[in-house]
Image (tube, rainbow, N blue to C red; front, side):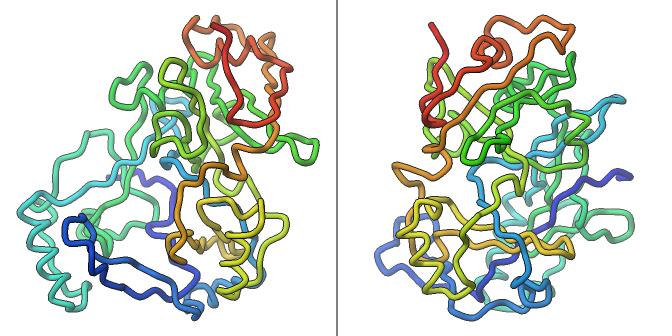
Length: 324
């Protein structure tokens, strides 16, 4: 594989975590919880976490924009995973509590096939020209989202390759206001984004409906937290529970060396999703100047629907509806 796509292989947690067994979880798929201690990880301290930029962790599926067929394309996250036999062997090894680094994979035989267009993630390690799995036994990577793709239909709905644009949710120039607008794919080239919406992760933001699904791309790091808590566990816990700005899935700190550090609500034993989130409660305006684009948008496409809402403002992101 000569190409390699962006994204940190695994974003480390802010705090050192510990595994706690769930006594009533015999029938659950994961009979344990991973909870944060009060100790900051060495990786967080090495990355100068105290001077990092805290941003909202958006709950969606990760995407990537890079070139394909000579033009900017949206790529979907696809991790290459072990087959059943190799996975069983790997889990037995994990449960034996031995050092994960000693496990030996047969890259040629242990993993499920992926499309020829698959590329590995940027920071993945290689051995003899082959990508190596991470500590979870996965090979993070990407596949291009083709126009009218059935497998990646929700990804496909937020890009128009004829006009070379994507539907992006971001901050408006006016404080406290969100904006949905078409953005040239060339402007987000080599960036990672989160796809959110009706059919992604059980729709935690309440976007659209089964009849009129709505999906959007959010650039990673787009929503900086204005009044973040200190880096003490009790302060963060209080912020999640008491502040409107804390009604988020988690926090991702963007460090100056390019490292990312995260903390999920689940790490503190807090539930997610919430009935009301900070993101879906903010006002939003639709900015869609159709005169910029030479192509005609298909009548049922999101681009057509949003172009008809140009200039309209909604009190909350989750209030967006298209006329019947």
